[in-house]
Amino acid sequence: MEKPDPSRINFQKLSLSDLPLMHQWLNTPFVYEWYGGHPETFENIVQEYTPYIEGREPNDSFLIMYDTIPIGYIQTYKIRDYPEWWQAVQPTEEAAGVDLFIGHPDYIHQGLGGFLLNKFLREIVFAPPEIESCIIDPATANKVAIKAYEKAGFRYWKTIMDIEEDNPDPESHLMRVTRAELFGDR
Image 1 (cartoon, rainbow, N blue to C red):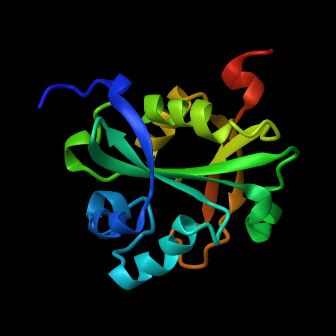
Image 2: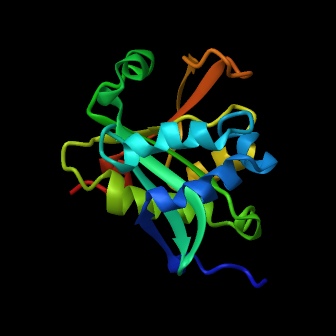
């Protein structure tokens, strides 16, 4: 396979018919190493992602597409909508969170992460005018993700204790990008 062309990346709303693919990806070691920490049952995936798809949870979930090929997952949410996380993060402005993974093995480590995240920030995360910053929390040891997030404009912000009890890494390495940093002063 030749090097993927980042300009062919787009986003498609996650649907119920995508859940078997999410199950496959979330049970792939290179995904669950950094996203979830362990394999997932199909029932757990249905339970977690169906409320996002049906609009019962305030989370906007998408497949990352390379032309018509689904290659990963990305989501955004207002941090304020998750009070426990908001209390832990303590943003000083209206902030969104973002999480993602590349699930298709042909597209990992191909240099797409920074580009696709930057595109997602510009097209989706900062579309609501009230969002002033975006925060992402890679594992401290996930140097590949941190480098990709830096390419998208994120910078280290602070370290906090992780609120997830089963997380083997007790600290969250928070990175942040503001609307002004991403788009320049307007």
